[in-house]
Length: 425
Image 1 (cartoon, rainbow, N blue to C red):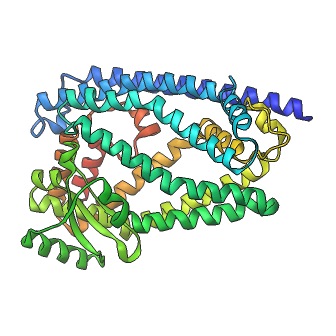
Image 2: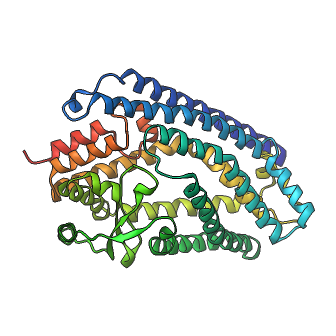
């Protein structure tokens, strides 16, 4: 197969996978909308004693509104992806920057920064509508426009300070470390990600939210006893001002090694009873007990290693560039082009295996629930989950096929049925 034929095959494969992926996503979204609408006026039997019709209808309307808006985002995203690739957008941007800056590291970094800024600007209207129209309509948004702008400025600055050095280092490795550059680059990126995971809770997260130590002595004593019983140690228990931005509630662990923290949204503590808070925490402890976090990190690193190895091969093939709408530079490095094209193309080809990752995630959630039932009250876990589903307006009647493709957490009916079955009589 010569270069021209290979590029044509890639073009056809990319277009086919893109169109097929868009078609399946539209089909799944339409199924979700119809299924949720069909069950909007009837609370499922297992929830009729605990969920009001008004709450059930709010969840249905919220789900439908988000899914319909997602269709618009999907169409726009597909058009933008075509514009960047087969229609020559990335190629044109690359040529403009080469003419302005000449070949070299500055041009390559400028290409990556320009791509990020243009892509981010294109997404801003959707983010604004999601936050200030949909979330506002259903009573979830607590963010002012001033706070939104401040978050945008801080996230842009943090992204620049974090992203530019690692991008420059990887580009340098691509050009200076021979044919095994991808292995060195993967090692550097993996180490960098672990560093961010370690310093994120104490350095980055406080730039966006306020964290105060949990000052409820009874709660601290109860939670500490639960963690000791489960063999878990954390650096501290903190409450985050989640209500400053949203009415959604959550709790999570963050950090790595000795820097692990337990973080509760203030909205969660205000909504749940002490026993329910313990049950939610026990669920999170279940993830650590089953080593889900470590498994996910190892899996992520394994996939990224495979990705870098593939990038190391295709970045040296002229058909890779031509097949995705870009003319490779003859007298300048193509490293930034290769990185951006790879990041654009991989999601298109990997979409159809995404249900496997969703399935694994749901399996982990079931295991964490089972562990929580062993350590705390199954009834408390069930009522806590139901409150969280209700407070977050998560539909109780999602389309089953949509669930298999997208849901990282089991739907309420499956999850609560298992919790009830696992609870002592």
